[in-house]
Image (cartoon, rainbow, N blue to C red):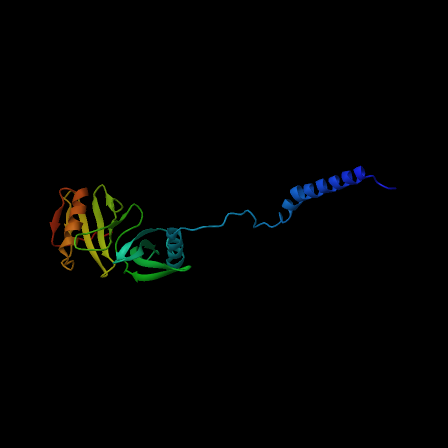
Amino acid sequence: MVLSKKGLKSQYFNLLCSLFFFALVVLPGCGKNDKSEGQPVAFKTEDERIIEFVNTTYHCKEAKVLKGMYKPEYDLFAVVYEVNSGTEFGIRFLLVHLHADSVVVDYSSNLIDGAVNQSAFERVRIPGKNYDLVYYNSTDYFMGSGGGEVFTYVIDFNEPLIAYGHMFISGSGAPNFYIPSSVKDQSIRDYLLRRIKSDFSDVKPVSQDYKFVN
């Protein structure tokens, strides 16, 4: 059978329509069995990466992170994490930086008094320093109806040093605040006292520390 020119044109048109339909409908469905297609890529912030590292490395449940210029011209990360092993309780401070996919620890403090829960953990500037320091305050965590104590620290990672201030109330007495003589920097001593006075206006500086007995 010989097709007319009109018939050939009609078949040619139908073929083009079929190919267009195949490309439009069938081809986009190819590869749908690949389960990874369209799945969101997990993205972790700098803080999340550091918290994950600290939790895994030190087996802690609570930690906080602060980014800051803790050495002149360098952005680093300050960390406070809680130690609660049953035989030890307290906090440690870290200074870390990120290198490619790794978290590198530049400094780790000894175990000292404190807790992460309810604590204040702040990046601060103190006169005479051209870099950031960290201020820690345990706030109400160790306070009770019959008195209690507040642990405060200023951490200078550039030295490095940790300046300790201890507010304590025994019974119905007035609040006392002790800073050891080993804290030589007057600007840090003044800062610790000023911050504790913002919470306890009648606090009295004392020359001897006090240890609560459990």
